[in-house]
Figure: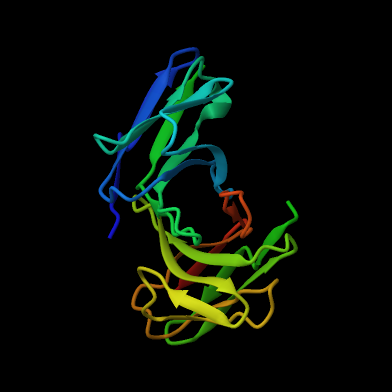
Length: 113
Length: 113
């Protein structure tokens, strides 16, 4: 089955710096890759996702890139702010009509003022 | 925080007791999911349901049971057979339409002593 690895497990940056979180997946048939943000004690919320028919997607300060050949995808956050501090999870699934997400183990991002 | 609700937020039980976690959604979503979240392990799928009266085991179903008698409700029972039940449990739902987003509930933190 699918296996998703996520790195780093923790990431500390200064406010205004960029942050990059990387994930690799094992199932070459996976074609949907979402990123979820979970603030302390709260529910995970989708922040951006990408389908395998595109290589990059941007939404204001966040972007996701996908390399299907290498089977990895990354989350990029620019101009980080303290409110970006949270745990970020990547996930992967096949687009088979029913979505079974396999999650990475999470990255704790800390943005210091 | 409407849409998908879980109750209670915190639950304490003695070892050997079964306990049922509630999950309700008013989003008219067909698919519903239960995940378990442990520190450093991301989200792992316990059970999922695509339609009423139908559900399938996820990756870690042993010691758990579910029912889907109504579209809006997908309760999870943690049985005494679950060897390590203390965890944070998240319910999610997703429409069967073109949107791929899974919406999460606020979670229930179960502590078994």
